[in-house]
Length: 549
Image 1 (cartoon, rainbow, N blue to C red):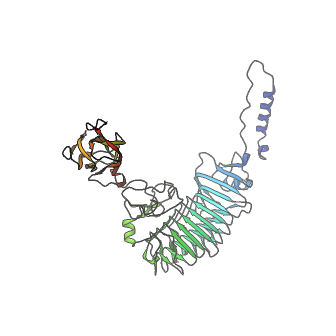
Image 2: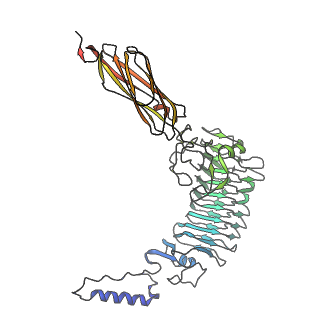
């Protein structure tokens, strides 16, 4: 029982009465069930926030439990949730929410922590284990030193968290400051934050950081507008968007001094007044299946620093990146926004904003993303877009994956069957030649060309649609079948009968191919051949199967 159950003596009386009632003999009715017990705060390690106030009266109970009270009352490893129907802003009373223990806080997507520009939103300094913050927002945070929105010196996960309009007034990490920790940020938005010195959005100091499926946009500072990575840190950024950040001196998007790996990410529309608009790299950096273009810098637009980021291939980059990896594509800013992605961030599905892929653009099926099964929006990846030749696995370059064909298409296919698999000279043999349209679009002017083996002569052809042109009876050559228009999922069959001309142990092959006045994404199924064995001897009467005298 919760240690707080004693605050409710009436509840204990009810439980005792229920137990006594259950013990009395009653031979005329079925056994009675005990009434359901309502657990108090903290039972099963779960605490429920039922008030938007701050700080509260210091006690977390069923009458009132603020978020600050729940954090104080929770035991290490506990979980804090939000009561059903509770929605809105928790306006902090001048002090950030401190966490010094392993804890999970789930805001249910309905709670925002408003620090009112007087304090940080969260200060997490747990030593007893990791902290998870999920489905909540932090806004209007302020720190006199590092960290405006969230200050982390503990291993942590930020899942579906939004940090906005926060300021680190004395140093770095306007949105999130991370020090000496291992932190995962996924499906989150870090936007519109500012730092006095470094890391307008995120400052990783002596830490290991993984950023997945997130958007970092509109942040500003002196060095590393979106993300600053210190020389003792490592960062992996995957399936994310870093857009519209400002690094006044350098690193509009990212300033890296440690180890950086970027995969399937878009770094674009970032600005630096004196340095590189996209990535400034003075450590070790590599890009794969990513877009780093359309940025604006002082001396260089997209790539700068002591060491330009290395390429693992299949990137779309600006000229300053000097990229020479396999499958890399160099573009100008105009080409990027006319041929690759839309210029503005928008809600294109999923939890975070992205730059939409342009239909038929240069990123479509031009990438390589082994191991990835979803894009930034959580949609399937890779998806093969018809009419576009795959460079490798059909993955699109950048964080987003086009989910279907750009246009409707026809897909013509031909197949064959035969009524006999072994014949002799003089036998009749009938081929069944089938033409199908497997696509979603009609195919006009469909024509089948059936080339007879030189070892047979034509007898007759029969079709239910269209017309046939064939060699004279008794001669060999090509049978041409004009089917006209075949609608989607159409299925037509022609039968072609021939007389076997050759004798002895050999084979005869019939070859058919189909064409139409339409783009066909799969030409491998546009032709088919079938081979029949010819046995020694001959038949009497032209197909009767008897032996000649």
